[in-house]
Length: 245
Image (cartoon, rainbow, N blue to C red; front, top):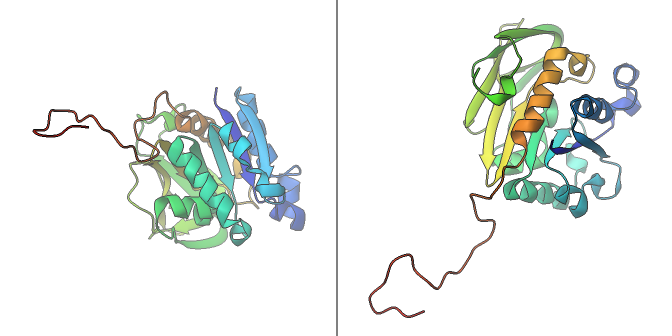
């Protein structure tokens, strides 16, 4: 099973009683407990720790990094964001949750602003599984409902996903690409939209199934199909007339 680090800015839980009631130990600890129950070796890190808890040693030992952030994106050091992006390109998986769409590592890796429209109105969200053969959908019905959700709507300014797994419809009529898969270098990235901090989204069975499946899907595979640095080669694949290394 992959080794997972769950990162959280850990700000809302300290400032909002409603969030603290839903996640008394922090969203990161709750998500980590869900993954630990599935057998994953889980660790947590937060914004307030030295180097945001994402040292080279931590990332070297991490197979999949889960990222939850919302109101403190700008407080993440650029150096740490680039470190995370580099580890993804080298093979570490990245699962970006909800408002992590505006996180520095995600936008850096995608090369686009990841802007969207939003509304907080406790409205119903129905997620449609549109890629039922994808490993992230294992154990899920064709559709399922999040009873209370913050609306995210299109346009979502991200690159076209390599695989689109979920599309959401909201009670107010909007739709959204809510499960997007990417490859960047040797690393796999999954963006999953549900998860607003004032609603009990991460307590829902279907959402927890997605989290567990995403951890397994995003884990590194044996071998590195893409080089992680430029290499000089003296010997050509075929003979070149007049060339001597």
